[in-house]
Length: 357
Picture 1 (cartoon, rainbow, N blue to C red):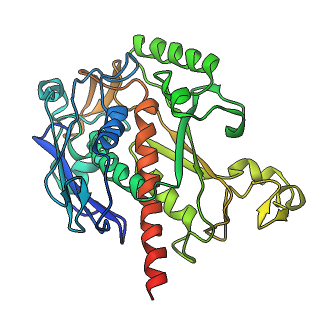
Picture 2: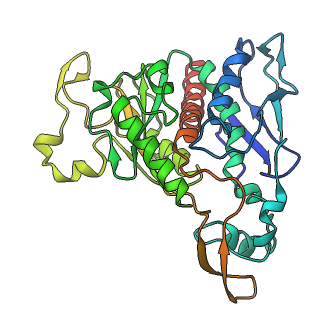
C-alpha cells in the first residue's frame, strides 16, 4: 500500500488501523537540538481525540503518545522520531453487519476494488483515526517553526456561517476553545452546536467549512513551478478524510471581480493594501497573512436505513451502528493545523538547505 509518506525533507510515515492494536509513525528529517514541549504535543492530541464533547463520537480513547526514539531529555537527536498510540476502546463488533456490505459514499467499495480485501472494522486504514499520527508529527513541526502562527476555526456548519473576515474575530486560543464547536463567534457557536445536536438526534450528519490563517510567515516561501506553496497546502488539505474542497485568498468569489478590483496594490515594504491574493503570489509567500478555507462533507456513516449493495451485487438495506461523529469539524481543527505545519516545516528545511549551498 503506497501513499503513506508525507513531505520531502521533513517527512512523516504513518501506520495503523482504526481497530488495530495501535497507530504510529516515524518523523524523519527533524533537525537535532530542538527542545520539545511534550505536554503541548499531548494538548494537540487532546483537541483531536474522541469523546471530548457531546457533539463528537463517544469512543473513549486516551490517545496518549509514546515516543520510541529520536528524543533524549526532551530534545531531538537528529535521528528518526518513532512514536506509537495504542487503541484502547475499539468495539469491532459494531461493524460485523457491514462485513459484506458497502456503506454509501464510504471507502468500503473502492478499497475492496483496489486491494481485493478490506478491514471493515471502523474502515481500517481509511478511518479518520489515522489522522492522529498527523497530529503528532504536526505538533512537532509547529515547534520547529514556532515563530509562524497557525490558527484554525470552524467558520460554517451547514447553512450557519460566520460572515466576517478573520480580522474581525478574536482568534486567541481561549476564544476558539471556549465552545466545543471551536467557532470564535459566541452567538453562532451556540447555533452550530444546537444544529449538530439536532442532526445527531435524527441519526444524520452534517458538514461545513474550516478557515485557517497563517501569520508571521516570511516572504519567499514556496517553490515554482510544480511545488507552489498553495499547491502543497491544497494537497495537504485534500488528503484529510471528508475534505471536498480547498480555496485560498479570494477563492471562487474572486472570479466575480475584475482585475482592477482584485489586484492588491502595494503601499510600503512590499506590503499590500488588500490581500485578495491570500498571502501567496506565483506560488510564493509575499509576507502577508495566508488564509484558506477547507470544505468538509457530512460523515458517510449515518444512523438511518439506506439502500446499498453487498459484495455480490445484491441490493440490501443497512443502518449504521456504533459511535460516529455527527460532524467532523471540531475534531478536524488540529488536523488542519498539523497538515499546514508539516507543509511549512518542509519548506523551512528547504530554505535552510538553500542557505548552506
